[in-house]
Length: 162
Image (cartoon, rainbow, N blue to C red; front, side, top):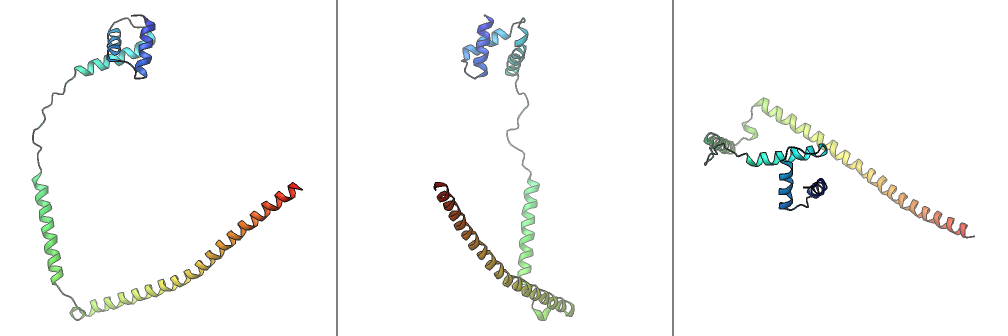
């Protein structure tokens, strides 16, 4: 086959426009020993494709997958333990009278800390009102600035036309 025809087929092959018959012609051509130097890369490509078609997967595949029953039983046991723990925790009723002196002291201190944090958060929330006022005034100023820009543009147009 002429070298010019092979180069045209290779161009079609690179653009994925070849038919199966044309690809077969290319395979036959590149199976030869004497190939021009600038087409050696294609020879390697077609040899690789033909070699990989002949390869076969020979490893035996298991028909049924091995199941790991140990993990299933561990998950069942973990769920059972969690359910039992939750059941006993719900049945254990603790009131302030059931606490000893140290636990009651810790409870009272915790409640004082929570009330202090709550008061500080409420105070901070009230301060945010000032920020809202400042923000709204800034937005009004930005709108007024837009009016000034429009006025300035209009004035420039009037001055240019005179």
